[in-house]
Length: 529
Image 1 (cartoon, one colour):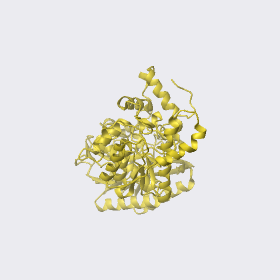
Image 2: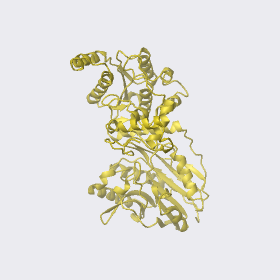
Image 3: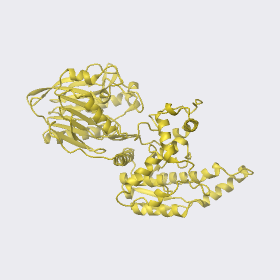
Image 4: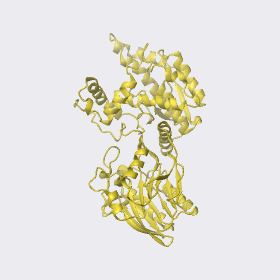
């Protein structure tokens, strides 16, 4: 690179399909960047549309609006700008990047590697590009040879075509990857290591621009990165917030430090916040049992939405312990949020009376227990209908896996906030929240878990043993233990509860394999190893 150039990396949070607001956000960020001295401005993958659009890509009007937005953007562009959009050529859709300059679209690149695993289904919607992303860009009277990738093009180990190696053969002055890469634990570190491994011989800087924000189950973490020509990480954007980095591609700046629990807390908070704001909701209601799961969800909701917008409702029955009722009230006080108690024992008694002729002569079992949970679910939904609150369900991943949850009861809700955290992670994150002061009453963390639906009832699992086994099964990393009897029993239990998970609220994804769009197991399934 003959002279230093200033590159603005705009880590933005678009709203899927909101072309007007997305264009305003991109335009505003662009104009601010050039005002600050940027010579090149970069935006993430599909930032004009939002990601992933899924079947909206079959709608011609959606494609046309996206192309029209790109044209409107290009008209204001003086300093070069790279932005992700959807291109259409001869009736085919392409996940594309546009390079805008001098009031027009000067160059287009079509993504070559299309991911088709886990939450990704790009081959359903897009055609593969073919030509490598190399183009010449004039910046301040000098020409630069730019290499361009889109997200999966970087992750080429499992593909026949090694695009990173191809790019380096063209001796680029700068390599840029625009991405919409979802958050998962340890993903940030994996990206850093991948870039260093792929481009260690590139002898040019590398820019990674990632999307940020929540979209349904997915959380995009940002953490956009700058590497110098020796592949030293010299700058990184913060996670889970919109931010613009202005870099000269040489100067090293401090790299933000995020612990695992900090990333989980910020990621889940962002997922909740964006799910609410982007669906037009502002207030949440949560059934507060006095247990660890609902306590953690309450903390996340208050962080995401503000204390005044969270409504916590304790709904004790005859089996609810005094300490659970006290703990629930204390948590609400600590969070300085809205709290109400609705005793459900009278309703529970009426249900038993109404059902007694049908249940005559039969022993009490899970049917009577689940009535309590379903009463609570109905009350929460009534609050939702009356006041416009969105119900946050409180089940964790271990419970969802094993079916230790009640359909139309504790599974009721518009969003599952911690459905991708196993029980051990729930405890770890709760303890992290308390690291500076006691927010969640310590008694909630220390007590033996219980659904409190029957006398002296406690959860039937040793979560420290069960949680990692369940995670292995869901991740399908189970071959080494495939003959273990207990392991096989767990796998069967997980499979036969698929019908419950299909009726669950969307689960915010924070692991490599969450329940939801990335895991497709048939409900009718007689295959048990």
